[in-house]
Length: 116
Picture 1 (tube, one colour):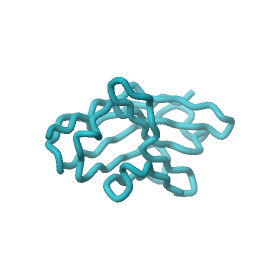
Picture 2: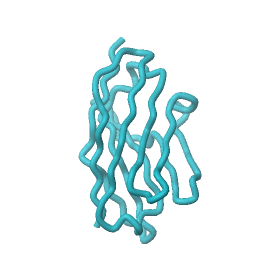
Picture 3: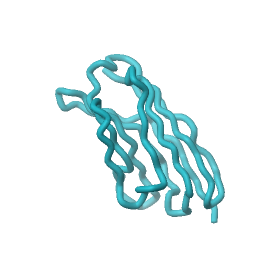
Picture 4: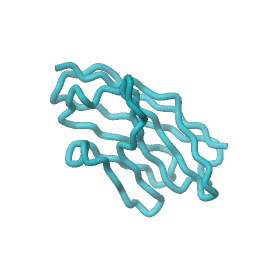
């Protein structure tokens, strides 16, 4: 089992920055890829960014050039640096992990609110 705990959300003005962190514990060695999803009120949960063990990164078109995903070498910590935030980035952000055998899990989420 893998447990994920997010931190770093909050309230920020448009144009500002936030950095989200996710701490993974448990069977961390079983994790292949990690990422960030978000869910705004009334909308489906969507992928924001993803990074796998080899360092390959993928981003949603809506955040390319503004958000950067990174991961420490041990694979225990995941980050999302969010710059030039927009009101439409307001959502609950969830840390996600996928294991080599196809299991996946989410953290409890952290709220990001961007005011205009």
